[in-house]
Amino acid sequence: MASSLRYSVLATPERVVDSIAASAEPGSIGGFWIADLGARPFVGRFSKNQSFTLRRARGPLTTPRVAVLRGRVEPNGTTAAVVATFELHPVVRLARIVWVIVFCAMSLLVLPAATSQPELLWVPVIMGVVVLLMMIPFELLARADRVQLRSDLEDALRRAGSISVG
Image (cartoon, rainbow, N blue to C red; front, side, top):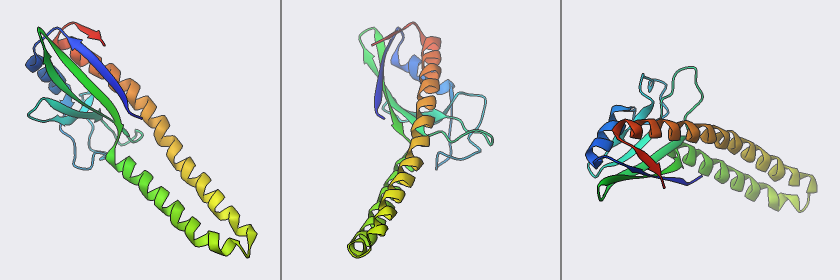
């Protein structure tokens, strides 16, 4: 899922950070909380070294927000460089790991018995399909989140100054 963005903004790094921060609200600890809704496009935080972690706000009637935009603002001569990467939310990554562990555990339990009962070979196949079907919706949700995060980030950067991609 890692996809990177790079922008050059005709403004000071401090002004760029202020512009992005003005578009963000502090989020909850878990990051999937329904109460993370507001008028601003982002929920997230900034650290002292001008790095940020942003995601879209989630309301009670919206789908989970699974993409996270991690980046930093760096001085680059007379401009500010914004470098960011899309990642899956840590809770989503943890859920994927748990599903793969469950699949491996089920396979390890069933495969030895399948030598005497070949019909048990369907259990790992079906479990694998279930695990795959659990991962596909998160990828589709992340794709939609990435498009909106990118658009909202570009809007926030334009408020700081003229931007160029690359």
